[in-house]
Length: 138
Image 1: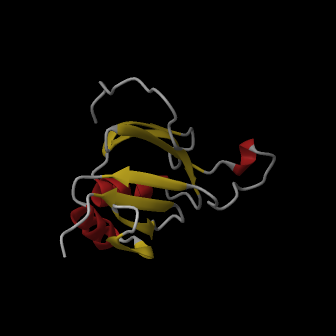
Image 2: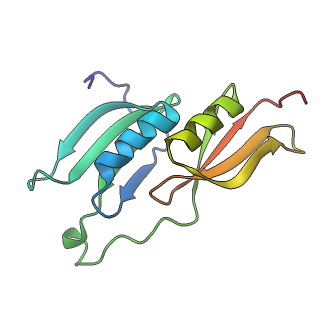
């Protein structure tokens, strides 16, 4: 892992991964979306990820395992109401890579009326990702 990532600017998504699967999520985002892990800090128990920092598609993504004991004993709620968007030069290649890594289709990839090739997938941890790019000639 490199220690020289770009400082954060703007809004950075920070995902909580349930069921102690944050390390698995880092691997998935690397395979599915080409993320590069820039840092990882483990909790004192040595089993859970307290914080991971990824570079992804020109931006940053942070994530961690759930720590219910720090939230009054309540687990984090399941993902809902947010979509993480990836704008890429070749939506079909990015789409195939995400599906091969284990994402499932939420909204099929296709040329859309608004002038973009666009679709949505759900990652194995319940987070929705949209993938968009230039229209494909048909």
